[in-house]
Image (cartoon, rainbow, N blue to C red; front, side, top):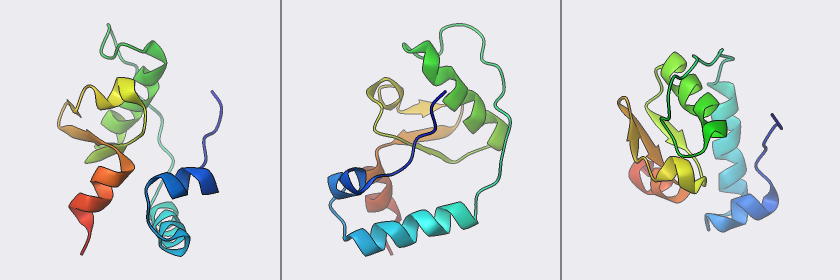
Length: 95
């Protein structure tokens, strides 16, 4: 699986200042830890490649999956994990 990173073009899509987005990503990295995804059985998501994301969220007991992936976003929630776009996440968590 290819490693995905946030690019300048990805940051511009969520329409916040680049410096704010970089600070947010830096905070997320500081608070993150490596996890091994749980194996998902069956057809949980219409794209089987996304099962690893769901398995990782389950293993990590995540509160959110933040994604632009339409297959994941169509679920809206998975076993208590809310699935939202970056924009929606920022709207819900602005101070």
